[in-house]
Image (cartoon, rainbow, N blue to C red; front, side, top):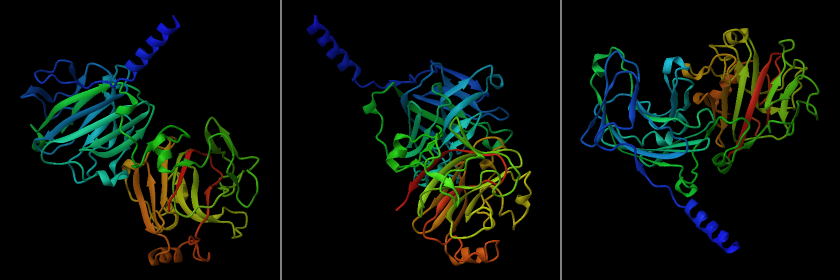
Length: 452
């Protein structure tokens, strides 16, 4: 009996380790297994291909699988007859309880424009861009405007990855939609007659459901957008990221000019670090907090949420050698601000005190898609390269870049509020600081990677 059980176990283990097989999603003859959602663009099966055709004055249209998929590997080929925007929906939904059945979910972008974001991940119908391809410039030339392109999508748990013609394009970690249908989009064209009757062709649409681990692609080194709070994904770990704040304790942080973490003002609750509202002034109730360690070249990520009218900042290259008279410590600052309601946005020069700007020095690029409403979580990112090139990012969009220590940088300092601080911003290393400006602001998912 024991031998029999052992044999059965071996047989079961061998079967479970077998690789899942490719299955076609399109039979090459008709649209059986698919349904149309959204607008009234035309879909037809023709010559072993699915052909989508634009129609004026109808919203985005989707040819969706009747079946839902969670973990899978999808491959397909497509070409554009003439240039227009499209995409491949995955893990998507259409429910009567959400905007009368509006399609929402992840989309692998088809973008023939000069922006070159084909392969990026957009959340249709809800949160918008999750992985704009500006985050991975190396993939922006992979898409071919003429001829056939091959797309690959891998979904495994909360990881979603895309490839364009074999080139890794996007890597998103997100838990919002664990499963859903796959759909072929024909983008709405409004009343633009010039875009009417344009075609997109799809073929060789196939899928592996619930792949074996060995069937997924090995990790590469592209940038990962991780929406899971206070988490380091497998590829992020391989890429060298670690948590700068552990999401639970004050370990690694202390009050500026102090040896311990503030006993009041800062609250850690449910994975969120919050400076409480006090007096609206610098060094409010708890004071600024800084990292124990100093950093020189690094990539810093942080997620933040402003309350109406709030002011704060994330500073880097912070030096504690200056006496500031009880005010906030000195350093280069990624401004965190409610531009509409806080008066500081109107001060400085040409908006150089607005959200994500290099405070009092360089104004943020005006990228409307980067701005989310006050009260929502925003993603900040600061990169300081070893050659002193510096970038500020907001919600996946690059909004500031400059050369630390260049003559242009020194000229800006000379006409700023920092003009009397010797060697401002030029120290070889410094602390990272979260500012207490007397307003309630929250932080989470603070990650860092040191660069060499």
